Image 1 (spheres, rainbow, N blue to C red):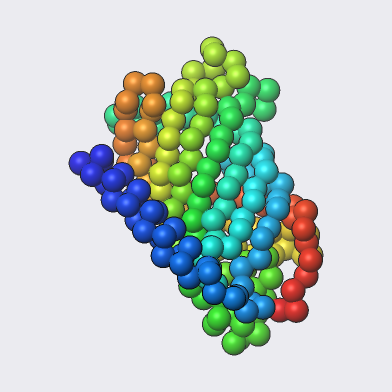
Image 2 (image 1 turned 90 degrees about the vertical axis):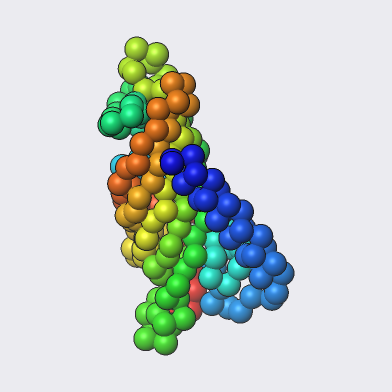
Length: 195
């Protein structure tokens, strides 16, 4: 059943990317998605992120860094993060923003891709750099609702909540899990928008 679920999510990601690459060929107005280069710090670790536009209201966010690892079993998932024994991670998150135009109409900021969105995240983590720590190669895929807001002129707040499938890539365990993330990002290219 979980394999069927993962196939549907993968098909949804592919369809979203194809449709948005077609839409992205058009000239975008000034209120379009910005490209953001950022240093990220949150529950998942510390890393570098790069978010770029796929269309007027869509983006794809790539992240890589050091953070926690996972132990996944058929009935439970354990997350561990030690500052001196981190795991490597890589994630890809397509986002569909749905309220940016309404935010503009209400006079609210859309700077730094501010808005609410639906996203699909694929995250892969390595075992800890210390083999005795217990975490293993894992992949996590989730569908979520999130929001992104600027904090001052150089910072960004992002959080999401959803549901996903976690898989241990060594022993092939998998289970459904609640997805939650919260992070702050320092923006390297922090040009302000007029709104």
